[in-house]
Length: 314
Image (cartoon, rainbow, N blue to C red; front, top):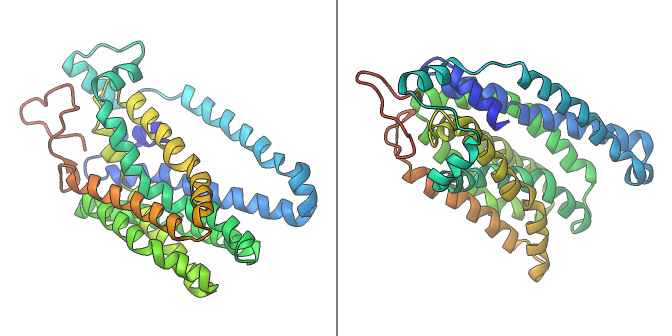
């Protein structure tokens, strides 16, 4: 998804970078709806025992088809006009292994991407993965509650992500990002209090605040920020690999870390602190980024100077 969003950013007209990249980010919502919907259908059709025995493999088999289609689409795409223009103007040669060049020259950029994605990944995975298991096993609540919440979150994000992206193009990426991360920070503890109280209404409200408002505000502006962390020549590999590496570090491990933290004292406090801490780090890092309006003003990672009279691509 990181590479696809980068292509969208580089192909977008000035002032619409976030909105164009949001078309790719909406894949979060579509994927969540499809995945949750398929699991729900299989669970009710096959029964819980059959699904846990062999039915869980079906969604993974379906995903293989999607991966093959995505690979075919990418193989037929040409380089963006912006990439060709930048490489041509500045005489940059194409690196054989651009991701290694990006990692060697700008290791801090990969760390920034990880920190910036914490608010996004923590809010989504805590609500859609950890809370599902916690609410059923520890609180005795119906499994359908968070499955339905996941469907709701996915459907709503198809609207909120592009709306927040349009807002960011108008008022600035940093304002939207920081606001979203702060909302995630402030909603962390109340979300768990609502679950402990078994209040369906408040659970839904704070789930939406975390996985729709906070998450979608953050994710809607990420790609225009990430693309400026690397030069045009290895931007695709640098931002793309950094994005996916952050997915593993911040997303893939989150449910397991949260479960381990739950086992420390048997309460939700450590998990809430983990969620809040990730959002806080994202707030601090994004707040300190040198961003003016919707365009990063100064970035040492850019390996080429802008010609006289030209503007930053973001």
